[in-house]
Length: 230
Image (cartoon, rainbow, N blue to C red; front, side):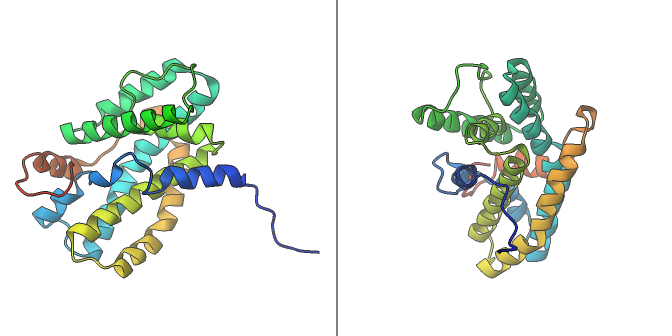
C-alpha cells in the first residue's frame, strides 16, 4: 500500500489558480512595475542583492499589511454575499494607493479582469460588484468562483506579484534568469510566511508603510524614458 500523502487540494481549483496567476492572463499586468522601474532609474536598486532587499521590504511592509489581508476579507465577503464589506474594502484599498499611477493600476487591472470574467460568464448578480472595482477585489472573486481557498488565493496573489517584479527587473536591469531564480528561492518561504502573518492581523493593524515605493512611484510619473506604466 502506498504511503504517499493524499493531496487535500482540488485539482480543478488548483488549475484555476494557475490560470489566474499566469503571465498569459490577458489583463495587461506586465505593463506595470509598481514603482520598481523608477527605483532602478534612481539607482536605489541596481543588482541582485539590492533587488532582493527591495522586494523583501515591499512584501513585509506592503503586501503583508495591505493587499493580502484585504484579499482574505473580500474572499470571505464574496462567499457570504456581503456587498457592504466588498465596497468598504475596495474603497479602503484604493484610498491607500498613494500615487496616481498606483491607483490607476489597481483600477485598470480590476476593470480588465471584470471584463474577462464577464466574457466567461463568471460574475455573479449578487452580491453587487463595487463601483470601480479594484484588482484585489476582482482577483478574490475569480479565485472564489474557481473554488480556490482563501489561503491559496493569497499565496497565488503574492506569487504573481513576485513573478511580475522579477520580470520587470530582468527587462530593466542586467539581471539574468539565474539571478531571478535565486531570488525566487530566497523569497518563496517569505511568501508563505506573509500569508500566515496577514491572516493574523486585525482590521486596525492594516495599512502599508512604504514611503520609498510611494516616492519612486510619484517620480515615475514624470520620468522621461520608461518601459512601464507605473
